[in-house]
Length: 159
Length: 159
DNA sequence: ACATGTTATGTTATAGTGTAACACATGATT
DNA sequence: AATCATGTGTTACACTATAACATAACATGT
Image (cartoon, rainbow over all chains, first blue to last red; front, top):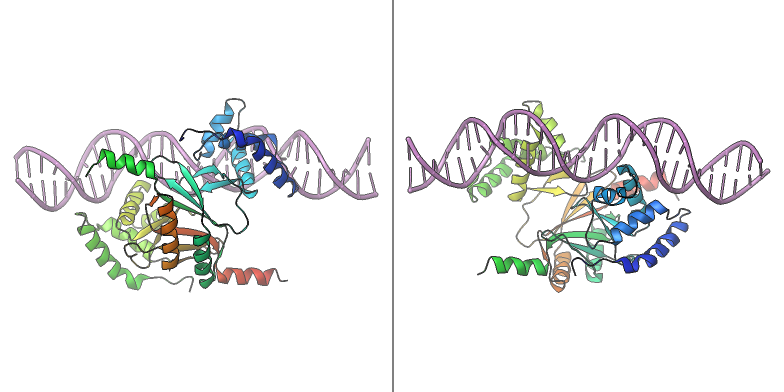
């Protein structure tokens, strides 16, 4: 499962991206689509320079071009930058308005699990309101160990 | 208030750091103390190179020395790296075991507010447990706008 | 068609963040 | 003294990200 790609959803993703771009009077250009496709082919976050290498096989790309495409894909809500990893992930589902998403990043295997949590959204909302703080996004990152890796670790360090 | 320093707590901080270091059979060396002091003199996060500049006034310091001290201060729980800022903050209170802390980082003024939230801790704990995910830390970062900056923004862009 | 404005990309250079690798020093323990 | 872990110095380098400016491509109104 860890190596599973998500290319099956690519057409749908492109359609969604096109629509979202259009509603902003922008467009999902070939370059942006390529970056999206590279991210869609992975189940883990990729660094900007990983994406550059992937694309440079077919055409020379400067880092800035990658960063610009990533910025756009983030603006339309399809991609998120994982600050703890300095890496970029495709969001599996387009997060709904006011939906609170948790990105569970395994520090061992690097896999990212996305979890929607209305309960955390609720308590977080109250806490932020009490602090008069307006969050820029409803997506939070949690680093830790996934169940698979924890199991592996307990096997290699028993008892 | 934004410029307020926290040098008054420095002695207590050093005592705490010394104790925590000692319990790990390590020590709060002069270098580490200096880095701690620089962070304690600011109410906002500082980049590693900001700290380097602050210390290089008295003595030349290589980046790696700063990073090593920061790593140590993080290990003993006095300092946290804000991934979204690539910057380091002194934690105001030593976070208790299992306490969930939110770091509210204002993207406009850069100030950081630390909020303890048992309610978020509770819901987050349940959510993570349901996902079989073990968090590496109980500290989460939220980027957004603080109340002061929001007020300023609404004044300059009325109605 | 033409001028204009906006969107998107190209190009070059550079800034900012973080580590590897190895040497050396210091202090504790046996 | 020998040894081991801890801590720092030094050099060099890798990785991440953006500035500044030029050009292209496309829509829109006249």
